[in-house]
Length: 201
Image (cartoon, rainbow, N blue to C red):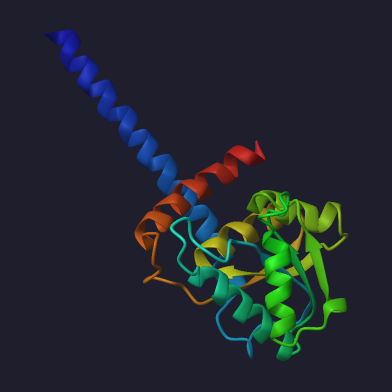
């Protein structure tokens, strides 16, 4: 049974290594971004552009997406506080019946943001794409990322790694989101922070 003990030991060590890798990736991202994130619009420095990361206005179960509403609210708050001069909305806009930037633009205009201050990036299919395209396609190497804190941590780290000067403004979190478990979303984010490093390889 010696082989069986070695197998169990190998499995245990492999699991331990995976846990250490996941924890290390998350710690690096969080540590890098912790002094670059802001909750209060009064405290955040001015950046010409706010990079608003898109999401669907509704969850897969058809409920109103509170994360969406809070991101729109945060962008409006920053603009009206004169902490950003324009808003680059980046999200998935490839289909006629699903266009995150278009939906967000509509709601920003309803809240008083001038249409000529809004830029749409309909190819921001992932956070990585949104950050990289802000610089390579739109020419912005300095900006304020607008999303929830757990999302901003990753976006700001990606920007810094790619020689961009980015800070984040944290939209309200949504722990009571209907139709999708907040715990499940946070768990996905744990693995998304690991994927950051895979993308950068």
